[in-house]
Image (cartoon, rainbow, N blue to C red):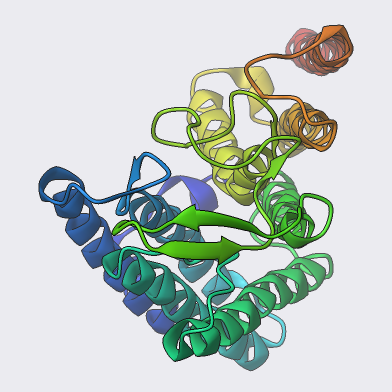
Length: 329
């Protein structure tokens, strides 16, 4: 258990060492969450039957979580530290610009994504917005590659971070489908004031955006690439929480104290979660709603659950037998 403390405790002094530009971005997103939350209560304007402030709120919360994770992670990387600091700063700037554009468009009562209206503000904003998306993806991809060549804490935490950032990059990559695979002919919708807006591209596959689930607005009638995008983007938090849980349990459960055992169990979590990401992406690309899975989707889920459970049971069984032999010897 030599490195269990690396992932299980965060002191105020350590927080002060987190990547500062990213923490500035996180603070800005926290402000946006408050403003957007207030807007949900007092502003009755809507886009596609959803409050104009729903999207800024969701993006704000997402960037608070992801930005804080990167701010904690980057100072722990020992190689190319200056480069990593620069990449983190680039991510912070791109995040503030992109989400800022989403918030401004919401305040204007119009769409941030897929909006092809020709007014100058939208035209310039869309160019900046697109560049920022590429920047966010590029930074995350480089960090993923850098993680392949260095450890952060013990093996369990290292693999959790590698797989988490990797899946986040894949989740971001799905954004390219939003104007590719999921793109449709231009369609005209209304902004919050009833003015026409031309949209090219959408989140959905097989059904137009709008009128989806509460809060997420994911489609209930067709495929929606936002589902695997969300699952991939926040995989790193799931994996790190799994590491923390195993670390806490290891203080009481003897067979969990071996670094290799915890790494194997994190591998089980990564396998199951990656299968969920792949299945929801496959489901969305087939134009199938998350809430209406067919027999093929159920079969894929069942196989994933069984394989993951068997691997977990084997890892636990081997670890307990090994502990028993050690105690008997």
